[in-house]
Image (tube, rainbow, N blue to C red):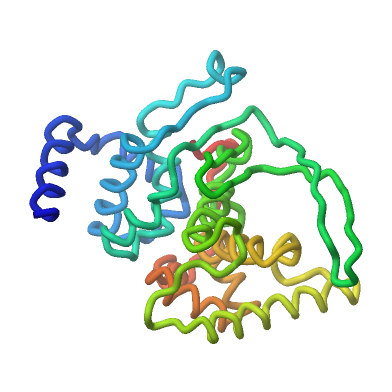
Length: 277
């Protein structure tokens, strides 16, 4: 019964909103991160991205409304990066993981938050943290326009993947704690062992005054470690597999995707002219 209703809703959606093939091709051309997708994967991602921009709300801050008008291909480019996270999952798992996603709010620039954090010695520190994005359990995802526009390259940075990785993380917790829902072929023990080894290595690098092999922000909180490594997994897999091959393999099995093979070990590339969306 539910399957029949779902197919009916899908048919009605396709009838009312025909897929914009030309706009999708332009969206893909904007994003080096999508290079290497085969025809079936690209079409599947495009359909999910098209559905995303109809089911979810993408809003611009009032200060941006007069200066930016997001065309269909730009909206598809944004949605494609979000849906890339779950491209390897079934439609039902994809829908389930996005059930706490309602809105993406795009702000004019980065913003600051007052943060309290307790260190390993029990001392609480207050500081101001500059952010490119922010996520809450059932609230909107917030991201700055310059960082959204800069996402989509193969350079290890992607604010959309980062923030929506937090949403996946929050599917079994009110907070991003680095322990998202796991599939049956990945045990919590294995997840904990591999991420703990990465966490300890990052902390050791910082304690010795050395630059970590990945973005040091991954060492700030376990939830940030998961989000940062998701960014790198999808946009700079060479960097992740070189630094932490066990973690790359874990995320390959978790997301059921292999970006390193998809890119064919090709050199890291970026789109010039500053904006991918």
